[in-house]
Length: 162
Image (cartoon, rainbow, N blue to C red; front, side, top):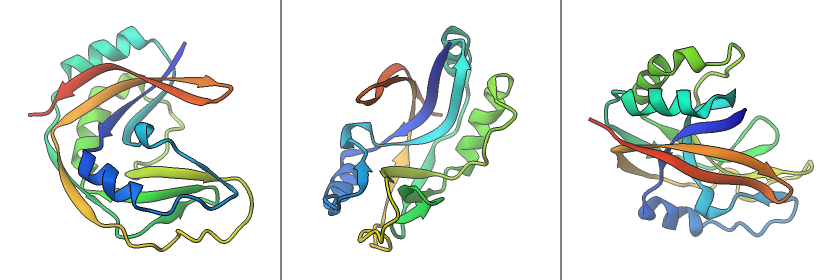
């Protein structure tokens, strides 16, 4: 079985904004910039062919994503930039993918994961202002493999939004 997710890819302008953040603090396992994305829907132990079929038949609407207004924690261990404006898109995806949804799925909270906090510490980046917006006109279906060096992501599908 496979782990996968449907995500919004980040435009280079947002990636450049995030690259300007100081990501040198020790005690945080920083996410690789090439893996930054916004997860819309996550699947654990699924049949990837069934999910691909649903993904390519999906009808979802374009949206405008608004990042920020500041870096914050999600729980105790995850450092994120919140992303708003994607609730309608998430609803379209959830309805299409409902037969693949896990009963213990968490409520949707749009975000870009910057890193995982490995120990109790005062995170210098927390509260730093980060703002911007971009048009979302495409979704990706990404397979995620856990490796000894972290997660390896492979795009298995791309879908333009209407």
